[in-house]
Amino acid sequence: MPITIKMPALSPTMEEGTLAKWLVKVGDRVSSGDIMAEIETDKATMEFEAVDEGVVVSIDVSEGSEGVKVGTVIATIAGDDESAAAPAANAQEIAPAPVVEVPPAAPVAAPVAAPVVSVPVASAPVPVAAMPANERVIASPLAKRIALDKGIDLAGVTGSGPHGRIVKADLDGALGSPVAAPISAPAASFAPAPLAAAIPSPAPLATDIPHEAVKLSTMRKTIARRLTEAKATVPHYYLTVDIRLDALLKLRTELNAALGAQGIKLSVNDLMIKALGKALMLAPDANVSFAGDQLIRYSRADISVAVSIAGGLITPIVTGADVKSISTIQKEMTDLAARAKQGKLQPHEYQGGTASLSNLGMFGIKQFDAVINPPQGMIMAIGAGDKRPYVIDDALGIATVMTATGSFDHRAIDGAEGAQLMQAFKSLIEAPLALVA
Image (cartoon, rainbow, N blue to C red):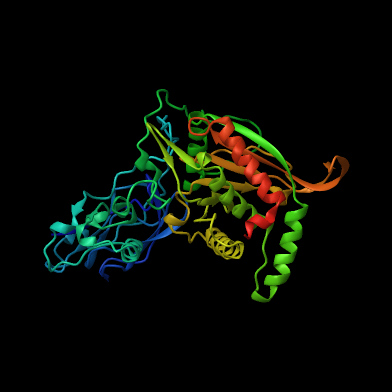
């Protein structure tokens, strides 16, 4: 019988997407793993792989179509046990369809712990263990790699992807409890309680001022919705400290001189990522997430780093920043930032994290308050370092000082616990040899 190909959920937060480009046409034969299309999600443009084998007999959604809901049939394949000519009515591509105009989002009930919501998978889960012995296990390349690294038998895992395909999320349960599992596990698994009152959508703007109306991208719509939900549902509080940078800048100069032959040049931001990772281990009560009737305590510091890209913002993750060397962090961030700007990050590289860091110092911003990225419990906002009057050894002098502000989720982190983190962060930067110890 014909095999329907549905709009996949390429990330735990994806509800709809744009079918940016078809890479196959009617009559083409596809095999498992072949790239069929490019799909624009709320964060990036990603390649969609075929799971089944057969001949494409119809393309039901034209490229360029926006607002295609997850689960919508986008193409049909004739399997090897049937004639590709059988569905004659669908034997040619549909004419290009007009771009689907997405209406303003209706009021939604935002979750308490995280604005990241669960989305339906493209098809019903199929127990892989129940498949005939001569059928191969269908799994994504990432799931296969994780299974190989962790020694997980995929034959005993239930796949929740299209046609029972095993995806990364299906392996989280096999890896242990939420604390032991990879930090990039989908936030939606926390199942928070819904907010009692819906968040209203803004009314259409009417103005006689000369203007241009720019249609929102999928990414910008998602940013607008999640930030609104975060500020409406997460009780933020803010703690600010001034930090003397002179010792850190001296250490950076010495490290760069030593690492120059290896082509490594550390940035202040690389040192800040390391400092926040170590501070979270020194103040573990701040390395948590609020999850309804649970508090998730992380045993590792995975730092989401805000990176500005065309049309929005993305937060690639440096996993295990507390234990990685600063040179390793520099290499990873260079790679992550470059691929972020190219739209080539994989979901596990920007979803998850235990805390975030946002640095606007390069723009000369002295101080700002950042919005928490749920389900994380905190975000550190870094301002510019500049020369200021500063008391040094009970005498007024001049020092290079920056202002850092932590935003905290008061449901998960009390004021004293947030203050301990800020104190640890300040101490590590002012006595930075601890960062390389």
